[in-house]
Image (cartoon, rainbow, N blue to C red; front, side, top):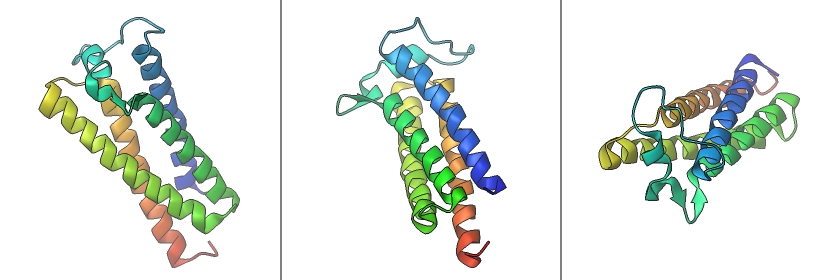
Length: 144
């Protein structure tokens, strides 16, 4: 497994941790979110935009991070290598677009920010860039 795929796998684990934290807050399993002195995590995490078709956005994020991890490991281990790399980039692009939409909702509609959501958006952006570079390099030399 090369360095980019290892980085994607590592970032996926960090992102999953953030998603789990936000799920626990969304479902009121733990107390109020620690917002690191910035913004209003509670408002963002309990707004009408915090769910999509009744599913918490944080849960969708967690599932996305699991997919990132599984696809990066599959690509690194040579399991359905081409499909895994293409799927990784596709999922990353969808995740990036959704993260940008949610960031717009935070800033442009709710006028609040959730630092955990921002961290997650940064992670998704990094995974998107890395998955693009990985796919491009692999297509240039599939034998590695």
